[in-house]
Every structure is written in C-alpha cells, then in structure tokens.
Length: 195
Image (cartoon, rainbow, N blue to C red; front, side):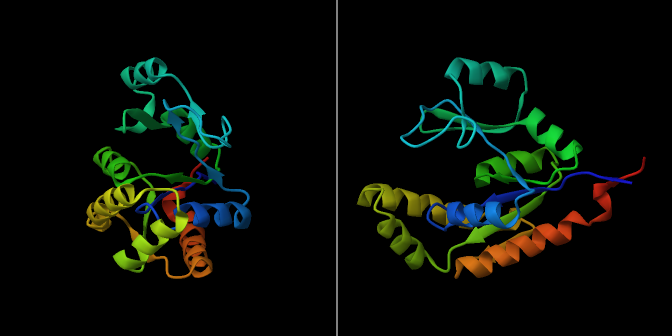
C-alpha cells in the first residue's frame, strides 16, 4: 500500500508563538514540508523568495484566483495571500506530509470545501499573556497591538473549527504535543491507498 502525505493546518492569534513553534518543528521533523504561501506584497528585509513567500504581482495573483489555482486565499491590508492548490496536492500525492500555517479565515474557506486535513489551533495561556508577548516583541505600536488583540479575541472564538486545541504555555511542551498529533494522524487508515 502507498501512504498519502498527511496535511496539518496550524493557526494561532498573532503573538501566540506560532512562528517559534514552526521553526522548532522544522528542526524536529525534517521530512515534513512547510507550505510556502504566495503573496502580492513586497518582500521585507531578510525575506527570501521561495523560503518565506512566493512574491508575485497583484495582477498575477488575480489571474491565479480567476483560474482557481489557490486552495485558499485572502486579501489582508491591501495585499493578497494564498496557498497553491497544485503544490499542496503534488506534495500530498507524493506521500510527503506537510504543514500549512493559516489564519482562521483560511481555515473557514477550507472547511467550506470539505478539505481533508488535521486542524490544530494554538491558544495563548490568556489574553494578558498575549498582550505581554506582543509588547515584548517590540515590533508594533500600542495602537497596532490593540488591533491585534481585538482580532485575536475574534479568532479565539473560532476554536470549534479545529480538531485539536493546544495552549502554548511552554514552547517545548507545545511542540511535543503537536509532534505527537502529527505522528498519530499519519497512521490513520484514510492515508493508505490500495495499489
């Protein structure tokens, strides 16, 4: 029997520690592929094409939307972000497991399509802790932090969309829990194909 690759979707409010968790998961599970999204925004300092994002023009992005080339996409702050349907399918069909980092809007659109995946939502220990983490990052103004907290509160209400909810109290423990979920899900009978 051939095994199809499993797909894990990770979501978390901004400041919950998702980027740190994903970086550790990349080290701990080197044979898992992290999907690289497309975006119409310009690269920021330190970002690399094909590593952080696939950077394309708004016109190219719109053409791909019109051709139904995205598994999911969203317009955020005047820029487009999306996940390539072809890339996800090719990786899965090759038997390679993958992780997609999506916001709750992306998850809602996938679930409307009945997209088969393991959905994991990462929670902060509390909104106070989330606020402290955002302040500690030092990358946003007070007003931007307030907006992120407002968005975070709305995102927290979407937890019923997910198969698993993991509270990120301690990063190492959170990574271990997510690793265990990915490992167990890999062996579900639905991932096996008859030859």
